[in-house]
Length: 481
Image (cartoon, rainbow, N blue to C red; front, side, top):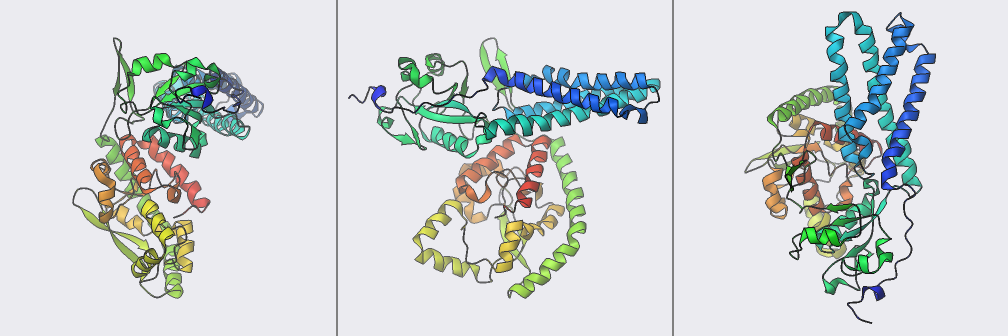
């Protein structure tokens, strides 16, 4: 047996291909939308929904038909049905943009054409309802059913078993909703053959996918990582891969933006990326912070008073805990929290780390302890429900924090944050953020840093609303720190 012979390295078990091929995903979504919109139209027409707005039944029927037809038409214009199954984030963004365009298209004649306001008003209401309903059905029915039946994740081969490839494989295994299911690695580095990376076999060089078609049959696409690790000729590598779809992952910390757009400069592929958040977006977000933080402080005032009394009854010490956090550059501020630990927490931590090697290793990786003896009984409840962070609404109101943003790091953590601090420090730290709704305590410290960099380089109103939406479910499920 030769080490250069990939056939003898691993005999992969047959991997069931998805029952829904990539080209069929758009057709499935289109048929689902058509069925949902037809059912919606039937219910509205039989329920005489248009009679409330218009006394003319014929006008109401035409407005209903117009609103329903606009939904698949505009979604097709935005290419939503042409996206693959693991372009979920892009599909969400385009659906939002399609709904905004539809609103603009119908709102202009609604304002200008006074005699037809009932027609355009009803059409707009039906169209926006259609966008919302089809998106929810696509998410819950198509995505949900395929995920439950094991048909959602498309099997892929990862090209490059280096650090980036390993990190990507672990991410795809941890987040199956992304729609990619890695089955194996290929790599030109012969020293990696006969090994497993991220619990997946490295079957040989990329050429083995062509030499032994059974390997290529395990997957439907390839994901190329670690582009610069071995100075690989990307064009030549892609041509060697026997797949119709090849995805190239750019380096961590380089270009990674949901707002990037592709341009073809006469055969030279380029990406246009906005590296800094727009000023208008930052102003809108600050206005949202003031309104929401002020409203929530008033609404939760009775609850916060009750929490303060229970903290006093639970253990000795102050109600509030202040801790210095980094705010970018050389600036710091005192973050406010309800006290959840005993007053001698730092001394307890040092004693624990000195005598418990496993706890010390866990703390070095996560900067947290899953079972932390420093936490008081009531404090454990506050952390579980995330209510210990309610005082930070005051930090938001005073402008020291934002409702959504990267984690508020402690100054002593900055050496581990490294060069990423230059990116993270450009925006205010947040009460909630991308890492808090993407695994939280299950993510390592460096994964949190990577997520924070990703958020800063991709932040926008739609991304913020997504994080707020997921935060609600995280809190309701009791997935606090």
